[in-house]
Image (cartoon, rainbow, N blue to C red):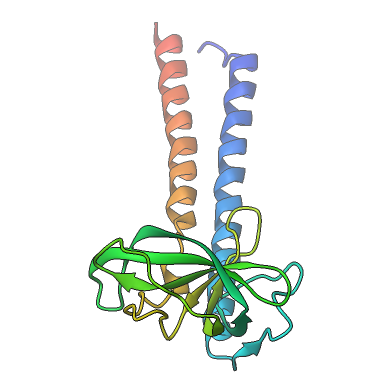
Amino acid sequence: MKRIPLLPTVIVLAAVALMVGLGIWQLHRLSWKEAMIARYQAAMAKPVLDWSDGVPLGARGDYRRVRLTCERWGGQHEVGGRNASGQSGWAHWADCVPVSGSVTVVAGWSRDLAPRALTPGVVTGYALGGDASEPLRIIADPPLGGLVANATPDPRDLPNNHFSYAVQWFLFAATALVIYAIAVWKRNKG
């Protein structure tokens, strides 16, 4: 029987170890994501957080209900979205300027793109985002300016495909081992 080639074997085993490590890392990410989603769901049940002094510096949404007073409204734009009944249409976004700071408010939903007249006053809704990947915004609940309610944000809608990624990495590792074993077997056979 011929010998197993040392350098290719070390390279394949190192690659397999890396892929298994990435699979294990994805399983850890799965646990982290599930805990984060549970934390967000718990935050939705907490009492409304009062931001009467304006948006706190470094505020994160984390699906908490908040209330703040918009002294005035800035620019508006529309983004494709769904209402509470699941119908497609337009979510109306506007810049709220409170006593301090600023935040985007998703004021409500409609079938048309016509901007709505938003009056200064109290806004209550779910705060989301607040980091580099997702700017802070408030989903108004109740909606403003005669708009229809947007779909209520649901933390369970956050992408959580870490288990399938882990399975992929484990399958890649197994495939690499099988292909390498077949290659060595053919080499030694011939």
